[in-house]
Image 1 (cartoon, rainbow, N blue to C red):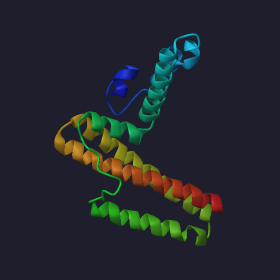
Image 2 (image 1 turned 90 degrees about the vertical axis):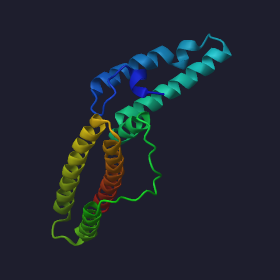
Image 3 (image 1 turned 180 degrees about the vertical axis):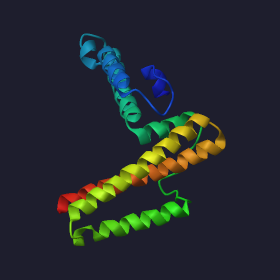
Image 4 (image 1 turned 180 degrees about the horizontal axis):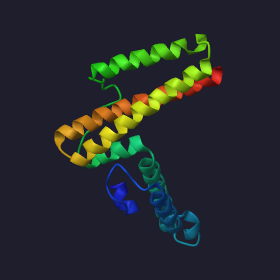
Length: 172
């Protein structure tokens, strides 16, 4: 199912979040099970299914990584399993550097400043990747889709790394 069509929004990486939320509320009102309390069992079951579908679509479109994955799936790109490795050696080296920096946070003279600096680096890297991803998805050819899939894997890593940094900050 094409979630962009379900929500009546353009099928592209950049979306209008306010419009998405508005369409979500509209769809929820239309299919919510409470609206079908006096309906037949079949209609109530269908309402529950439609509500779950709308919720899943909303969560997918709201999340940039899941939205990119959905766009790639719609384009017929089979996303590799989680075990698919990154092939970008410079990114792998940067990964190692970030991990080392995270290991050194607790021993830094100002660990909170070290966390802030890393968070800023992560945000900047993620922003650049999202711009590249937007461009690759808009190009729509096989080479661009392969690049977009690689960027999705990188962004998943960045999300995981950011979560780990948040957890590290909580221990300080």
